[in-house]
Image 1: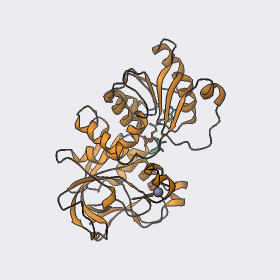
Image 2: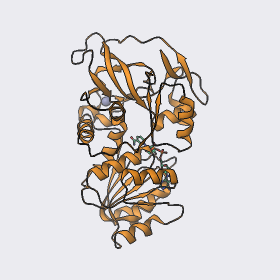
Image 3: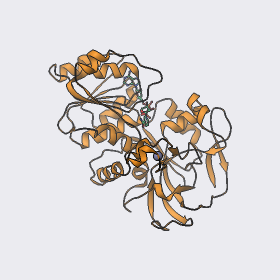
Length: 345
Ligand code: NAD
Ligand code: ZN
């Protein structure tokens, strides 16, 4: 079968032919119907410092997936051939202190497929049965695959009340765009988006942002204050990982407001904690992974409600993997929302 593989410790990846794997105990084999590229896949492709320290080639890339179970390994009881599933990509240990407090999203022994083992950029892939999430039959495969990153966005946006609340979103990359869709579906208003890329500001508008601004041309704090009559936003959601955006967002948040941080900063960040957080009594959340399995229920219901505007976010669809290099390069250049492969041509 064809698979996008990180074959060597260098930039890029290769489209190779490998054997269809056999599901081991507790595993299922799926026929991959849709699989999308995540920022993490891009880091592995680019072979950045994090990837160099974590990834051991040769390895099949990819983790966001929807597929149909075609073979069930020994000991798997609650899945069968024909089940239509997506997958939680964090394989948790269920034994550590965090897991035993039901905080699976911060399991200290988390393994990730496509990162710590073979992934799903192939026509068939192995999924541990304990990580499978059953989808309703009528959910589009591209939506089903997007549930994993949507889970990040849902945990960020819905970490506190948001209906009817003014909201600032910094960063409209794939995750920020999903965040906009969730915030709008949840009734946030107005949703103000700060994003330097014109391409992504346009996407943000299509997804439903009420205002978009370029932080390199306008001061986001001034824009927010003028829209909110000097009050600042109730909710600030950080999706960029840009230190400047964090500072601007904190300044633009109303005292007593809520801040949820998903973006990962490339370096330590220096902040005036006293004036930006403590004296403003802000409620600050760090967001990582997805709550198991509460977040998946929310994501699935949001998709089925028909209220999530996902189509403008899926900017690129590829049949087969032949154009994988184009897909990765477009994503690197910031010229995409989500990119989805349909492996079977
Ligand atoms: P991305 O890099 O595609 O998007 C980031 C966006 O921020 C880009 O569109 C960029 O133009 C924009 N940006 C840059 N500087 C800005 C500024 N000063 N103000 C506003 N916007 C600015 O990344 P993504 O895939 O959308 O992911 C978003 C972030 O979430 C990344 O930092 C990623 O590492 C992080 N992430 C965290 C988790 C987690 O579990 N905490 C999971 C996945 C991704
Ligand atoms: Zn654990």
